[in-house]
Length: 218
Image (cartoon, rainbow, N blue to C red):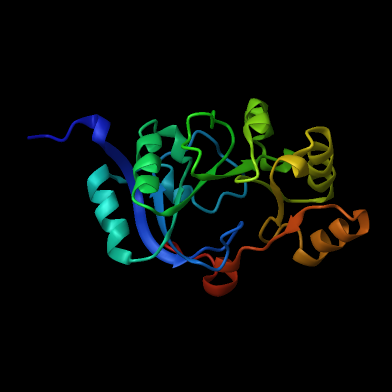
């Protein structure tokens, strides 16, 4: 008998690696990468997840996650929320006792995400070429359990991000992360800008790229 569509998701990959970003950086983590994304950021490093993938039953996903035997799970993409059934997967992962994070562009409403999930919302800067996709109604929904990330490509991006942090009071809502876009702005430049402004944000680099470069599945 065919599995009902309500119980399936299209996946690009599931793999075990070290979390390279955000609050859980450094923890062994199972990554569940869903297929598909409505955005086309110019710096995207997971374009291979835009198309293709295979249909997985949610229970099969849970079994594969359990097989790896670690506590942290990150649901990512692509844009995972572009598949509505992602919400059910997140809920079931939480029910199973995992420490769950969701990496989302912030272009899709996050209100329906299980409150036990740590939502890592990537606000798109001008140089991403997708700033117009930011759903600003997501920002009041953020809590101390969540994080908001800015990928900074140049000085103009930094100044825009700094303005957004102030305008929306983001540091009072959640943890704020500034990350240099790989090969577009140097980590030192971004760190020095943050220090010069005494900006109350967390500088981060992509640990996985320092370890494995641009290898897929890491």
